Amino acid sequence: MEVTAQEVAEWMVKEIRSTGTLYQTDAIEYVKTHFGEQFIFVNENGNTSLSKEVKKAFRKLHGGRIAWDRDGFFWAWT
Image 1 (tube, one colour):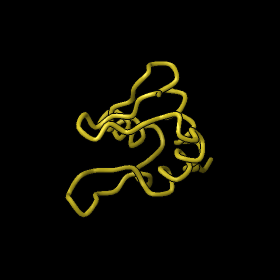
Image 2 (cartoon, rainbow, N blue to C red; image 1 turned 30 degrees about the horizontal axis):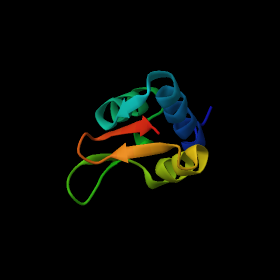
Image 3 (tube, one colour; image 1 turned 135 degrees about the vertical axis):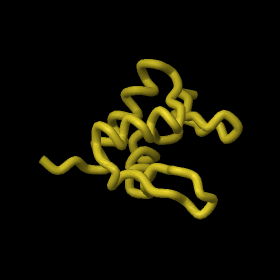
Image 4 (cartoon, rainbow, N blue to C red; image 1 turned 90 degrees about the vertical axis):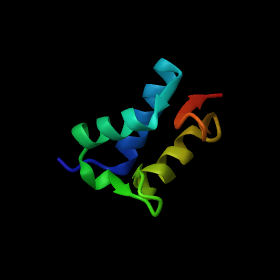
């Protein structure tokens, strides 16, 4: 069965709801292992990141209730 960016985003929101935070490195590792490498890419700075489709679905889902911590590289419930 084909996994969608929406399903990846739903997992991220569920994870943050239950633990309070989600580190980017943990998210990338989990997504790569459980959903597939098609949701991961290396950005222009050479950093591994989640695909734009996942980020877009994620933003829609949380509607501003989750914030990105630029210094700590994690998302947290606000």
